[in-house]
Amino acid sequence: MYMLKRCAAFMTAVVLAAVPMTALAATGTSISSVSLYISSEIEAGESGGDVTVTSSSSKFSINDTEVTNEPDGEWRNGNKPKLKVTLEAEGDYYFDSGFSKSSVSLSGSDGTVSSVSRSSSKLIVYITLDALEDDEDDHELAVSNLEWDEGNGTASWDECEDANKYEVRLYRGSNAVTSVLTTTYTSYDFASYITNSGDYSFKVRGVYNSSNKGSWEESDSWYVSSNEAEEISSASSSGVSGPGSSTGTGAWLKDSTGWWYCNADRSYTVSNWQYIDDCWYYFNQSGYMVTGWVNWNSKWYYCGESGAMLTSTTTPDGYNVGSGGAWIQ
Image 1 (cartoon, rainbow, N blue to C red):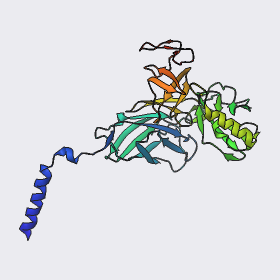
Image 2 (image 1 turned 180 degrees about the vertical axis):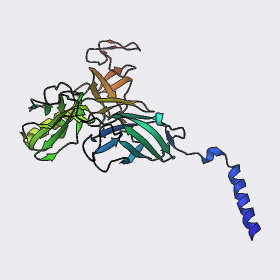
Image 3 (image 1 turned 90 degrees about the horizontal axis):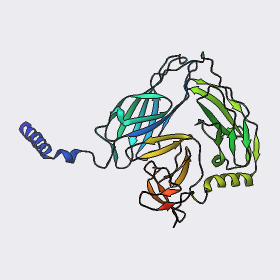
Image 4 (image 1 turned 120 degrees about the horizontal axis):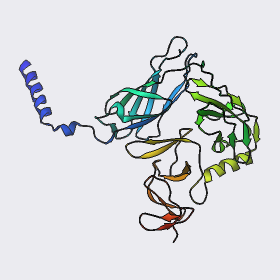
């Protein structure tokens, strides 16, 4: 009986050795890089602090974000929060065997990728955020003159001297409508969030860095009726007859598929145009920037190698486009 078991084990080993290694490799579509957006509320002198990590990719999901070195008491000046972010591949996607920390790009709160650990279906990314700074540096971050544009739902405020960016949040009554959003401008278009009647207000604060932020300031309330809410939100989503309407600030990101644009609220444009830094860009159904010809509302537009729509010129293939970008037939 012992000899039979040894023979069976030997035959199993022979069969496995005869199977080509390619047959044992992961099947499906590989993921060779990932882009992550970090939003950290951790501050020196405070305990806890929320950290969220998001991505616009449909190739994987973010299952867990853990702060691995959270102190028993308060965060101290110079502490570097460390994150463990767990990603799971979706569908028939898998993480490439050559995946390394250089395959991960970060945006949002400042930090670096310390290391990665992978299997075909799971990727763990270890991230170290930049050192926290206390408020001993006397930065002028007070925000003033908060106002509503009641015609289109845009909030605005005066620029503060030392702010590198601003955090804003929309409220209806005492309930928050949005999460904390970030912009480098002194205004934010909330039109797409104003969908119901109620008293709307917004809060804003200046931000020097992740651990040095001003106090929240709150605007006056603005009552919006049901009809007004419908008009404002409809105007925001309907676009115009040519390339559509612009949105708030954000950041360009790139993965193995191409370039896409992450808005301040971590949304991204799909099957539509977006106005970014004085140029129009078209994004396909997956949210990636398009180059070449685009058929929009029965008119043709041309996006150059940079993705920017061409105007008042001749396209590389010899066609003339007008000041609005449409092909002159």
